[in-house]
Length: 306
Image (cartoon, rainbow, N blue to C red; front, top):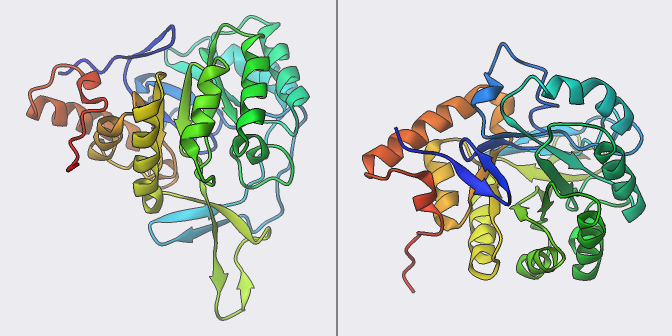
């Protein structure tokens, strides 16, 4: 068996296979379907200062090789998260990464300060600056270098835990956004969030999503994710967590070859909640077959033609 351990900042993870925010609930919902302690990390559903109901339905539609969603950051709010979920995480051996979102810098700050004021085992925070499904906040931060830097710097002053800035593919230059986050103190970036998309029913002549547009995810966006990770890897000096269309161990290996230190499995969890265990096993087999002892040996090793 290969050694799958990876390190990001001051945290060590048992393996590079994580579950993505918004695709695995809060990590506590389906213990009979998957052994969460086998995961490298659980990135929890986005948490906002107050509970949110999210967008009206319909807000999910399948598309070729993926799905489009416009959930709108529906969540239980940070107070309930602290009261009900943080104690449960004490009993897990896997690492917990809390995803947070806000409409302005103050909301991000308040959420983090509230969590930092209590004892918890969370390893760090993934900062959602790339959600395309809300009217205010989210992607507003992720498309502007100055706003990304300002938010990152503010949060860096609150915690010593990991700060992972989640980047949007819906920008002209994702590398500039990543560099802004790095310079402001981020420990890592994750890429990519969903790609803005639309689905139309030709018979009813209606859009399939209430908000008209949503976020496309799944295998359809894997080539976009790979390119983003590779571009970021060539310019950034901090780790990258790859996201987008990961279904197999080979997919995970491709992201690592492009430059990812770890990966997040997202849409595939809806079809097969236990798929991460298969991906971990498959990655192990791939490493053994290529005579590699460590998964970290893959990072950035893709060979290009030019």
